[in-house]
Image (tube, rainbow, N blue to C red; front, top):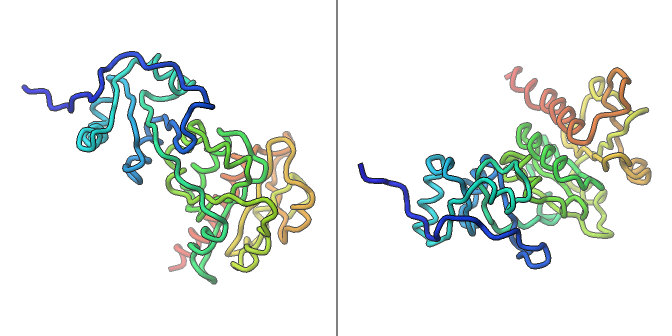
Amino acid sequence: MRDQRPPPLAASGPVDAPVPASRRNPDEVRVHGFNACIAVFNSRPHDVRKVYLTQARLDALKPVLAWCVQRKLGYRIVESADLDKLTQTQHHEGVCFEVRRRPLLSLSTLLAQLPRAPAPVLLVWLDGVGNPHNIGAVLRSAANFGVHGVILARESAAALSGAALRVAEGGAEAVPAAQTLPGEDVFGALRNADIAVAATVPRAGESLYATTLPKRVVFVLGAEGGGLPQALVDRAGVHLTIPGTGAVESLNVAASAAVMFGEYFRQQVAKPAQRR
């Protein structure tokens, strides 16, 4: 039987060592992890610039390779150890795409895209969160629970790396992301969009499970360890605490986000659906 696999456009074999960050195209990112790569291809295939994959991924990635052949984009079949070097991790799952970065929205653009009041809206605002794995986990939960968008401070936007996209398991393609600007009146913009600001605090806030959450709300989550700046907490109209046994001081930012998204979904999405 004739082999139906599309031929490589470049000879397969070892890849070069990772390009130093200073020489990398800042408009591109190396996305790795099977679900993350497939999500990019399904949502914006025109942004794929190059594909690296192991022999074991050939069948699963046939549509991607056919796309590459049709548009004369390069792909290479490499060893797993080569992908280790290219992605600087062993958690690449046999595939890596070089893709154009999805441009971050301005806050005003994100807010303009939201359903208008009184329709429910859920946003998440990450302040000072710089761990790519936590950001990726937040995006994965956000996609699962239908969060309308994520607002990122500069340090969080900088952490939208290939590692964050892998942990998001495709969620980064489903959740619009906006970056705040220095000095921008974020509270004023949210107020004009009829969105309440709910700061998460480890103690002394209203219990998440005993509170009727605002229909249009942004959950504000702070940096690992340091939490939210007090000035930001003071300006928030709602203060929420996730109750627990007290055996640990608090959940980390990714776990907190998942719990809060789930409770909002229960109150504003699942319950109304049951009443219809």
